[in-house]
Image 1 (spheres, rainbow, N blue to C red):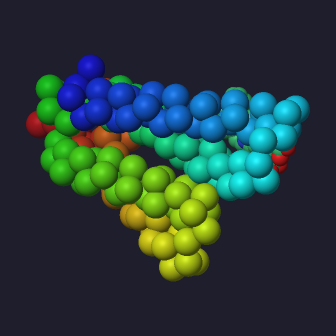
Image 2: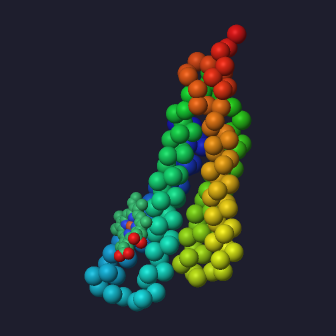
Image 3: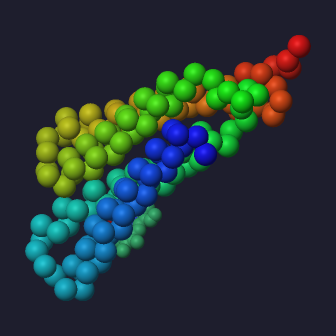
Length: 141
Ligand code: HEM
């Protein structure tokens, strides 16, 4: 598994652990109410489970298994930048809801996540091809 995939997957599990913890706390709070403030964890829980865990795990494995160009995965820079944008976005958007931050902070988080998605698609597009061909599926001569 390449280094960048390991980074994605490690971070996905890190987010899973926190997302499950917050989900567990919310579940407990539904049975044994602790403080109404507990519901502030819901946006962070949703962000971590849907994007920080699920999407991130898929991207990390995708980077690993999409067809390569012989041994190369091409220019990996956009996928590396997508990793940072995704995680900055997840925690900014999640904490914005939890800390009741201004809507602009939530927007920054969402733009960061969107940027991550676009960069990853831009990167991976050339690897959506039959094995043994060059970028965009062109036959090698
Ligand atoms: C991949 C797994 C999960 C995803 C994608 C996920 C996502 C979500 C989403 C979208 C909501 C909001 C639902 C709504 O407002 O109607 C939610 C609520 C909640 N989640 Fe999760 N969740 C996951 C796993 C878990 C787990 C494992 C727990 C418990 C340990 C948990 C506990 C909760 C609780 C207590 C709520 C609040 C439910 C309510 O509004 O009464 N979640 N989750």
